[in-house]
Image (cartoon, rainbow, N blue to C red; front, side, top):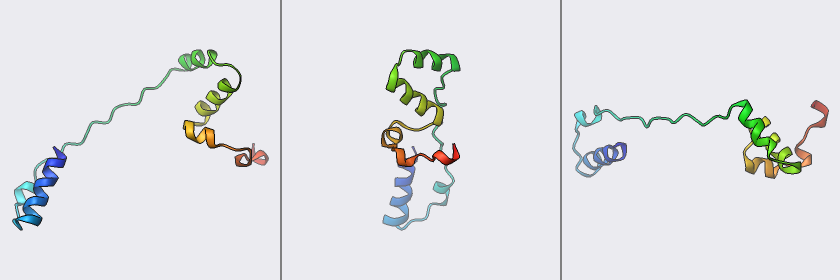
Length: 85
């Protein structure tokens, strides 16, 4: 709907050089935002319980810091600040 309205506004305003003030007043619906799926603490513990070793440590790092997978994979020792915990 928003794209069609923008196309009409462009067509009448720029191509036909016609001002249609009522077209500006048409409501533009906002897309509804979906709520993110959030795991309960018990679900997180269960999921982490299936992992072992480096995979578990990596999953805990991502979950605890909120990092994305790509951010965790790019993390290097030089990125850590051992002086400030």
